[in-house]
Image 1 (cartoon, rainbow, N blue to C red):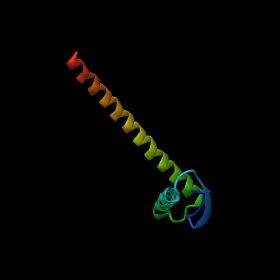
Image 2 (cartoon, one colour):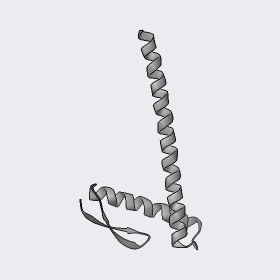
Image 3 (cartoon, rainbow, N blue to C red):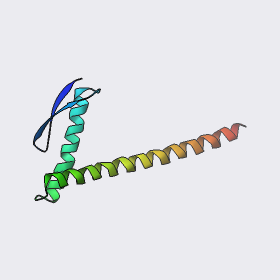
Image 4 (cartoon, rainbow, N blue to C red):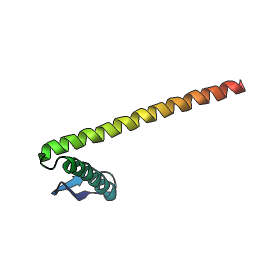
Length: 88
């Protein structure tokens, strides 16, 4: 754990973190792939705009996963309460 050199959109970045180096590299590769997906659809897009669109796509994925996690947690809580009532 320390400085990790990564490449995103052809640019080198040194990232410091409190997590293992391989995790930082994995995150950088994920971000780079998301940006490249934007470029595949719109090859003439400006790098900043591609980065912003990729960020929005990543945020959308995160929000959807969070909503699904919350839904699953509610379902589990409801089922647990129903099971507890059976034993009362």
